[in-house]
Length: 234
Image (cartoon, rainbow, N blue to C red; front, side, top):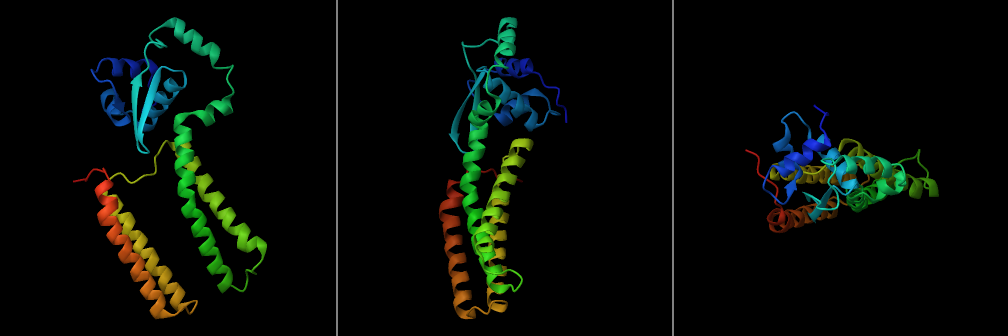
C-alpha cells in the first residue's frame, strides 16, 4: 500500500469538496485508490494533534473530520509549518499520546470489552482448576490466572488497534450474524463439556443453555439488529 501521503494533499482534498464534514472512508475514496485507510487515518490524526483538523464523535464507531478554521493555516502556510516544528519538541510525548482522541476512544472501548475477558477468565479457569489434578486451587491459580488472562487479552487487543489502526469491529450485518452464531456454538460446546466432563446435571444444564440461547436470539432480533446501522454486503 502507498504510504507517501502528504498532509497538504489531505487538506487540499478536503478543501476541494464542498462538504463541512468527512468520514474516514469518504476522505480515502477522494484521495487515491492505493492509499490504505490506516495511512489516511494516521495523517488525519497527525493533523488533529496540531489543531489543523478537528473531529466530532457522534457514536463509538462514527468520527467525522473537518478543517479547523481559522486557528491554523498549515500546511498551506510556511509560518504554520515552522511553528509546528518548533512546538513538536516541547510537549510531553506520553501525555500527548494518552490525550489523543483516537487513543482515548480505543482505551475506553477496550476497557469496556475487557469485562467479557474478565468473565471468561474467571469462569474458564475456575472450571479448569476444579477439574484438573495438576492445577491446585490456590490464590495464584484462582485469582492470578484470571487476572493474567484479562491483562493479556486487553493489552494485546489495545496494542493491535494502536499499531494497525483497525477498529476490530463487525463491518456488516452478515458478520454480526456469523459472530452471534459462533457464540451459540461455543455455548453449546461448554454445555457438553459441563455435562460429560464435569458431570453436571444434564437436564438442568441443557435447560439453562436453551434458555440463555433463546433469550439472546430474541434480544438479538428485537434490540441489536434494529439498532445496528451496519451495511448489508451483496
